[in-house]
Image 1: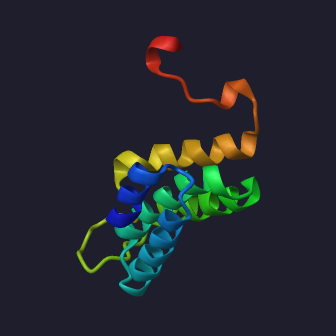
Image 2 (image 1 turned 120 degrees about the vertical axis):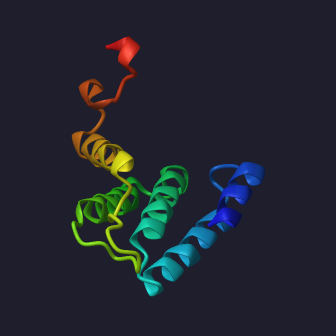
Length: 115
């Protein structure tokens, strides 16, 4: 996962190598049954897909991200660990709601000082 971030920093958001790193990280997170790691990987895949693939693929990643954030059962060896960090759950919800809403200006999250 870290390699994907570094490749993105060096080569840009559309670097295909970063996507390969994130795909591998997703495979590892799933094989280890680690939801918190999977959540971070899906966020990275979503960001990368915004610049490299069709919107329909980006929406599918966002739906997987949203489903993972809503999962009440922890999928990590440590007890009590949530599927997604609590601070990230509203962000996952906003991401998917904005994608489903389309280019509606009301769906764009704004900073508190612009409201």
